[in-house]
Image 1 (spheres, one colour):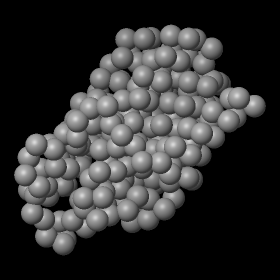
Image 2 (image 1 turned 180 degrees about the vertical axis):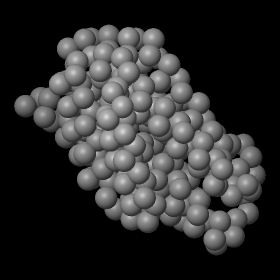
Image 3 (image 1 turned 135 degrees about the vertical axis):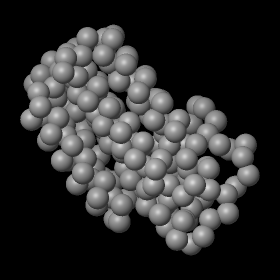
Image 4 (image 1 turned 90 degrees about the vertical axis):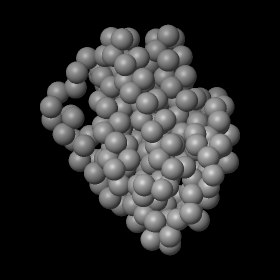
Length: 206
């Protein structure tokens, strides 16, 4: 019952609470960019996708931490989750500044990501769970690089957030690799890419 209550609390906080970052908002010291309506719409859609990614990250790490019996790995996953909370707060701040809203489907994204994270850790074991972290973070890093090429050049605030997120995701992948991750089979990597494609396409609009 305690575990269920804790999981429910984490889910509700992720989905409905305001988040506060432990680190300063990247680019906060710079002057607020002047954006056209079209630029705000584009940046808002891209940051909504990134916000969904951070909601999913919270769910993935929570599911993996629940499934593992390794205290060290659990601590590593929860530490990464705390760092992802910074990303959640930063993307929320950019959505608000851009006059955009989060995805209406966040509860669905969270539930799906939690199930995937728990399943990967429970069925595959710790090394596969770490391999899942590596592959996820590498795909997210590539996705964020794509957003850096799509964001308006003068939206320096959003670009600063995405650049720092990209650096953090790369570090999470390195940490998981160092902890003993095993590569995922090609079909699993492909399935993850397809699932991410669906999520990013839908979240861009809804």
